[in-house]
Length: 324
Image (cartoon, rainbow, N blue to C red):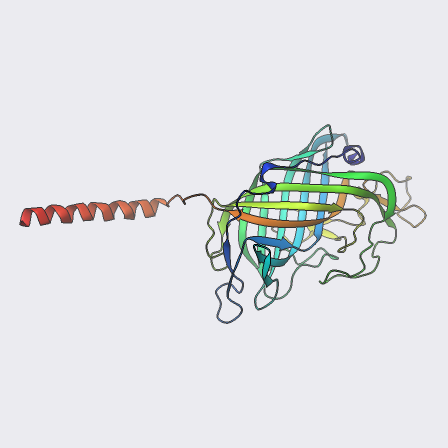
């Protein structure tokens, strides 16, 4: 069970978790539509505390395969430029969300390593952000950036202490519910946790990210992994593919709980304990930066036009020499 994997999980720091130089980027927060706040610049996307769900893979006999899928979702908090906020999500424009689905390898020592691939999407929605409690609304609106993982790793250290899973009291602003929404769900407590994923940008909506292009690097660094939940609500659902809204059950799901007596449902006398089953759900606090290649590779059409331009210039020079 995943319990065996996470009990001794240790932290791993990647070279790219603290990029040597984060590039400045520009965002038109209302997608180039008339009015609104317009273009802001930043060096960092700071996401509000969100939710991560790790689904351990089992073979046909129910034996762990050593791999897992990680689902992540969060609302944007602010865009900051060298530590100074330049935009708060929803002010004068759209709400922005980040949704991810990618696979990892679980090592014998308890760490995980990101497998290349997966889907990472940022959405802009003029109506509202995602609800951490329901887990819905993160895959809504306009896709503004997509990418795929090329590397990363992380870890989470769990203790043997067991507490109530949902201890959020409403300290963070957002569409959340400051009550214990899962009275029959407990959790093992974490002592520390972190992760870092390096993503290659595959497509950009330049009506929003005006100066980014495919091939840019997008790093997602989770500096804190928490259990129990104290800064936001545990999500009831996740998107399996970062494309469709919801569909995968989170908090309250029996897969989080470990073995229960046959025929006995989760009750206050026999509660679910997150971290003892094959899945685990945790609160995550992430931020992101972009780095662009030193120079963009021109598209084939651009190369063709460039060649035609050079040919035309050379022909003009030859005509001038003949006339002289």
